[in-house]
Image 1 (cartoon, rainbow, N blue to C red):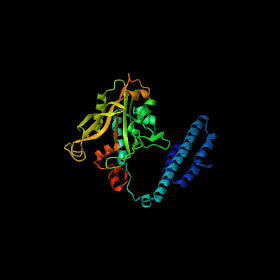
Image 2 (tube, one colour; image 1 turned 180 degrees about the vertical axis):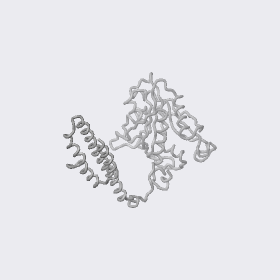
Image 3 (cartoon, rainbow, N blue to C red; image 1 turned 90 degrees about the vertical axis):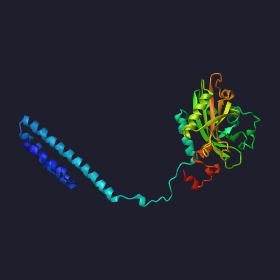
Image 4 (spheres, rainbow, N blue to C red; image 1 turned 90 degrees about the horizontal axis):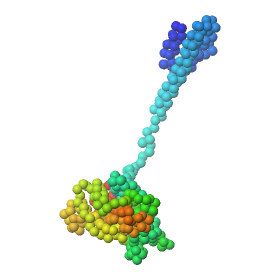
Amino acid sequence: MDDIKRIVDEVTQKIRSANIEILENIKSEYLGKNGVVTKILKSLSHYSVEDRKKVGFEANRVKSVIESGIKERKEVLKKASLAEKMRKEKVDCSSIFYFPFSKGSFHPVLQTIQDMSLVFKSLGFSIAEGPEIETDWYNFKALNIPENHPVKNVTDTFYLNDMRNLLRTHTSPGQVHVMEKQKPPVKVIIPGRVYRNESSDASHSSTFHQIEGLRVDKDVTFLDLKAVLTKFIHSFFCRGLNLRFRPSYFQFTEPSAEVDIQCLFCKGRGCSLCKNSGWIEMLGCGMVHPNVLKAVNYDSEIYTGYAFGIGVERVAMFKYKIDDIRLFYENDLRFLKQF
């Protein structure tokens, strides 16, 4: 038994500092056909039954210790060899591949949509999408726009070849799509690109972006609309910014209003951008017209709602102090690199 203990201490020390070649020699020396442990196991017949059990158990334990020790040492040597190989063969890719261009960034319009959406999400709104190609029903009729309204003329709207489909002129059709698929309560914003048949100038474009907002539930009031838009404007621009609601008219809301904010350029003192009024028109809004609710089979006696539409480029122009909407679409890197 003393010999077995000595063998364990001896072989453990050898394994700890051995390389692969020496490990094979150790295995042969102790576990081979004429190995030390093998000889002990072969000599068991010379012991009494009681001693045979003790010596046999200890000898087999030593055999397991040696086998597991050799296996673990091989794993350590294998990992060390791989690490050394990787160190020697390491390649600095940055010296081989060179990308001479600066990193890209979000377009200011997309960045503005994301920033606005984050504010509305914090106010409990979810985000939906609507198709850019619409029918007359979704773009006009379901929104309470009469058949003879001037906005339906080809001078204002881009119709497709069959004249049954058109490029949406606002994101408001998204309201109808959402309400057709979802029963109240509804609280959603719908960002997207819209199209108008008009000439481009410093403040107008034939293609631009809007964010439509809609909330429908029981007991929704104009006070709720004022609260959410005030919170949005103060969160997006700055706390304490003056704003006002002016009566207006939209076919799909009643009553309707337009929201003005204090001019960010002149701080309300009056400048050419705000036409010396100190105010900038920001968005349109109002309570959802009962006819719109009826078009999607909502009971207007039970449910009320509000809606609003915000021009993204207009917001971006105020936020980044840009005086020409055409800059967003000219792909001038001198302009885009500022964002």
